[in-house]
Image (cartoon, rainbow, N blue to C red; front, side):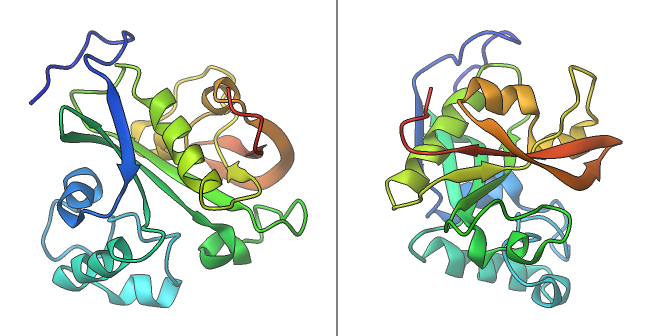
Length: 205
């Protein structure tokens, strides 16, 4: 396994970001700890709520196997030396729970893609992986015709965010990636408001 860099430093080797088409990679990053779990695998926003509640254990893994075989697959993976170290969930908004969200508005009628989950593997956090992960996810979407990419991070104004809620990212994180605030939302996590941020072709940093 590649050695992690010091916290806050650059990744220890070039980061490769690729489509999440390998079930084992996805399982390593967002698979549940318990085999009978009804959570995680990053399915909550990707599939319908009824199906998400119904699937448990091996059935959840098999559903993710199906998604990994689709085009596009359910997100992207960042790897170091062939080792999967970070995950980003990204998909056309129309095919996610955000299409029906009452708390996160639609800015316009563009067929935007949503980027809603970032996860860096323990041992690699604080090593500068988030920037190339976001950039790779954006490129993944734009290369497949996305007119814009949306994210819904916390506007925490530099305050500490509980790690269990940090998966949505922060406003500052996405601003560094070239995203701009497009709308307020009525959604809150960990006591912080979320903002709708957007990046279109040509805006990438």
